[in-house]
Length: 262
Image 1 (cartoon, rainbow, N blue to C red):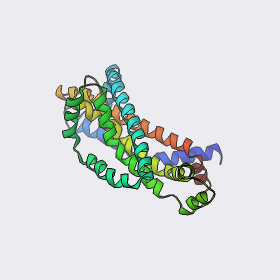
Image 2 (image 1 turned 60 degrees about the vertical axis):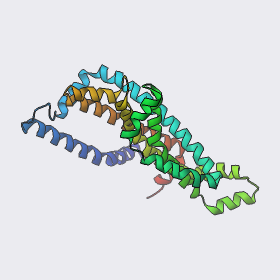
Image 3 (image 1 turned 90 degrees about the vertical axis):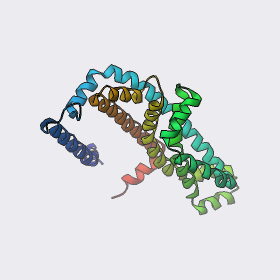
Image 4 (image 1 turned 180 degrees about the horizontal axis):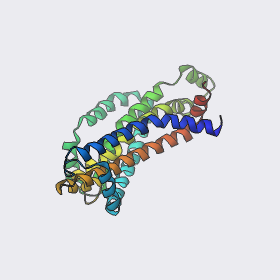
């Protein structure tokens, strides 16, 4: 496939999203400009972008703590999900013992648990990491466990007949089979990570996008609130794109198989 054809194909994939988002922004701009609505009620997108540029230093200073908590919490969540998934895969009784606990952890309302975690662990980085891990852990765990279970039994039997132990079978068959499931769970989790960090900052923090949004709301500056929301959405899209890139690097055979389709 030529470079021009690849570019046209990529453009065709992103064009619908660009058109739909652009139409929403244009409609929002026109409505805010001509509907006689005060900027303190609904600022137009042009004002939001202008304020974001003017307050870029303050936004950046508050973005760094949020991004730090997001990445640290997500790294802990990723490690915990992998470790527990391996333990559950190797020891079936652990699945019956731990899964109810993990499911219950997902039913806890963040609006209630976040202030308690801040009360117990202070206003530092630790409670934010814990809350991010709490909201991102379960999708990855379920995806990994489901991926292990999807391993072809014939492959498992073949490896066992060749003398491979359970650990070897896990590395050669079960783990590669779980990769597509894992990255699906990873993409779901990463969309919650930034939101989890911001919510943790709402409960108590010195700096961060959550505190910036709260202060802007209290000062009746919806334009700055939306500017911070724009930054958080951009962070989420960036992290989502990174996960897609990592998936392509980790699973080159998937991209080749897609390219081989007519």
